[in-house]
Image (cartoon, rainbow, N blue to C red; front, side, top):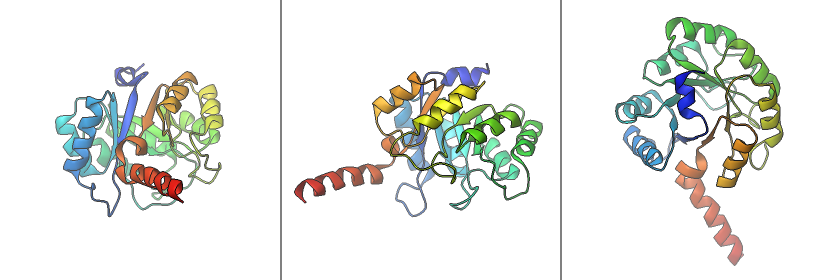
Length: 228
């Protein structure tokens, strides 16, 4: 197994991402959030945006899963080979990209994209963000190093579950011959523990740790509901 993946085995990866229009959308801010996550025990960081990734790389000594988002629908997570290579150049050890079977903006297949990354950045690993078992099977066939459940409920193939899509997680773990990173609506520590029990190599948590607007909304809804 690749040494970088061994470093992540059995650990928590924290996704540190802010979105357009949000106060925390700033490379320095997100880097500080990432540093705080590492201080709490995160073995890796997942982050988006070339500026964020470059800034984080200068101060973090844990593996970084990097991506860019182009748009917000269809294939938008590191959608092209050019995007993947730009992420690789930031020093991120793993490039996360859309691992679905949907058409990609540059016309390449996922396998073409992985081959292009291998040729230009042979030291970089590839994480496929999948939305179904068929995606995971295709991503594995394409040569991706990591299978993620990131897009469960977001690619149109499966309904969006309240929490983690346990049925999908079980099915992906069953067919995988490489690490599976459970990601997507892991909102409580016991869910993260359950993911590990079900065979995850690592668990990725974002919103429940690093998105204060959503966290505040959860509590606000509870308070307002109580006073209904």
